[in-house]
Length: 330
Image: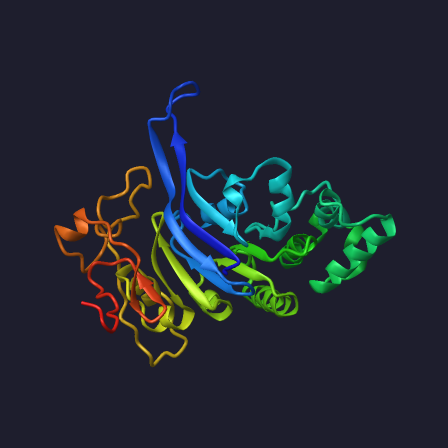
């Protein structure tokens, strides 16, 4: 059984044209997304800004309300929980936020930031046990235990992100949603944080949903990669297969934009025309068809493609990619 099983998840935000008006439109931030994460696995999630990556991550930890769908965590539907029951289950699913400067309360010491979750879930009984747990968590993320009484403004961006990781680890979660945890950091610091996350995963068996823009980082840390475009999943496969043999035209364009380290290696650049359409009124049919260099009309304009298996453990939502044929099938 998978650790996390997301089925037909939708998150639509109402658009109002006045404080007392009724919603006339909806921003379809996440629209019918399904995927699974196994225990101890890292699933990478990539896509352009505005494609719904962060909203999907926040929906999994129930920081935004769902419009439809289910989030099965160890067989229990988190979408149906609320109040104290939801709070108790949140111990298993934590989040590391993108902004290491805005995600920490500047009025709280590092000790109070990390121990807040311990206090909420009643995981420590005495002050000495609380201080010991804080010290162990700081050491686990490579920080000195003496930093516990300092405030966030006294630390660099990389150190703040380590504090955010320690906060997420405090309740011993089974899944952590990493929302672009290294995008605001220098390249050298990015490598340190990525290595730290991998070490913690090996030690504690944590699963990650790793959201990022950088395909090289995602390939390095992820076992599988999921590509989103305008609220939809367009491709899902092993990391190596996504990078070396992408099937969907959008994924091919993303991969072509990654700079090559070897100057003698030349990759054909695929330049997409136009801008990303509005998620309020997404295009009919395939949502990528207005920008797709190989779209076929009228099919791509009228029929929405389903995510189907096009190779071994490789799914793509494209009419032009032939589905995998199974022995004995017609």
